[in-house]
Amino acid sequence: MQRRTFLTKAALAATATSAALLAACGKKETGSGEAGAPAVATSKKTTIKWRLQTYAGAALAEHVIKPSIEAFNKAANGEMVIELYFADQLVPTGELFRAMQAGTIDAVQSDDDSIAAPTDIRVFGGYFPFATRYSLDVPALFNKYGLNEIWQEAYNEVEGVTWLSSGSWDPCNFNTVKPIKKLADLKGLRIFTFPTAGKFLARFGVVPVTLPWGDVQVAIQTGELDGLAWSGITEDYTVGWADSTPYFLTNAISGAWIGSYFANTKSWEKVPEHLQTLFKLCIDSSHYYRQHWYWAGEADLRVKGSKMKLTTIPPAEWATVEAEAHKFWDEIAATSPRCAKVVKIFRDYNDLMAKAGPPYRYT
Image (cartoon, rainbow, N blue to C red; front, top):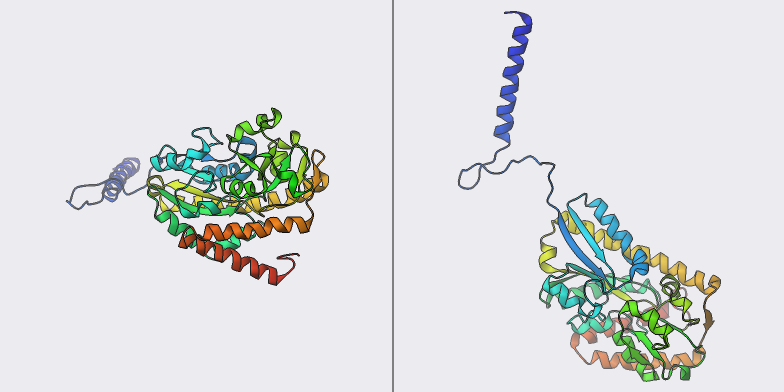
């Protein structure tokens, strides 16, 4: 046999043997003894698609969520894609929870209060008056002082929705069309704010107004609103409110907004564990980004911002607002044992921070 003929036949035999071995390895036995799917991975991927709606409009979402969702989609490498929708794009913010329960949308970024979450602790989402002084208070309260476990417990009682994580946003200040220099200046002001914050501010004559987020700017310009108690100064500039509300009150009724990420339970359970972990890491990335973006922005724009004039209610007068907040806490604590537990955590935490002194608390 010629050498070339021998090598050709040998190569053909080796190829046939390899093919047979690969075919055998590519099959697995099922419980009934029948051949199952190939064990080796293929290039074809099953893509999970989610629709996530945030409370924020487009300009604000550029900071509070969009970077983390873009990072997730890139890292998920085609296995999962999250489509991000802004405030009221798919459903009104006040109907987000029900829409998520029904599976109309897969996930939500918002506070419990704004989306009418059917839990007793919803009042603590958003701005609970004077519960926090700084943005770092929120992750400390959730991760060190037990709020994670309480939120988990509360949402385990709600069918169809899984609570994933809570984090902090900016403080709650007034930005208005008229200057506020004393407490009496609040009386009669029509203010866009959050449900629980509005209920508290009504004690001082504020008239809380509920509007779709996208209608707020026009409502200020047409005189339907006198201002907002919805954010710090960073958002005022970012979303354009600083162009219509030339005054900013430095007194804050809360040091940080408490917001959360939620998911439809069935949608969440369909996500494989490694992608669940990835999504939670991206949520943490979002929490971290907001910490430094707001912290830097609040200081920078108070000093360098050219569109808003700062005003301040004297400390002694503002102390009466804080004292009233603690009465408000007592009323909320009386609504359920779980709310009482949260209020106690707030009290204990703030007492400890005060005793720790600077930089934790300044008198």
